[in-house]
Image 1 (cartoon, rainbow, N blue to C red):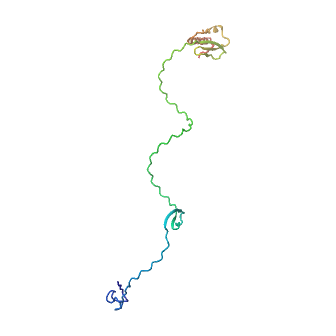
Image 2 (tube, one colour):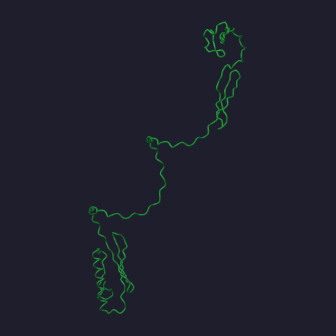
Image 3 (cartoon, rainbow, N blue to C red):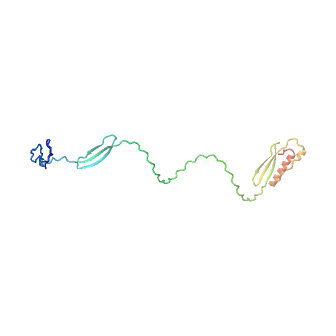
Length: 225
């Protein structure tokens, strides 16, 4: 294949009859012919033997800002150790949206009973409740055997009644103050005889006591109340 080009200031483009394949010049035009392809060159020398296997070993995290590196060990069976620097801590991101509420967990075991607290202040009294039903009448109790005795007290001392003995056989001791000096015989005779038999009932004793008090008031020994 021939390639033609313009030569000097030839007015016609290459490829017209002003150039011929022989390389002669005509009308100021020139012609260039490419030569045949040369023979194949000799084979080059064999390069060094590459590794038989390549294995990725450790991957080490380096400090931020250091350079990344790869170290090969193991000879023909290469083991590569990569050192990759850790990135600097980034800025705190925006707070994410609140997630959905999880399911309620199982109820835990009941804890130990705590210590008893201090007693609180007494609250106000509540309203009185309705009256309850009347109870059944009890059995008639045994009639007590009452014994009454009388003692003389000091003038102007109070009249007292002291009960001793048992509920079945009570003993009533009356202390009656002695009258003031100067009472006439007629006034003294006005005091009733209140001797009480040992077999007197409660009603008898009450009647006798009332009679005694009336006699004392009539004699002027005991003032009316």
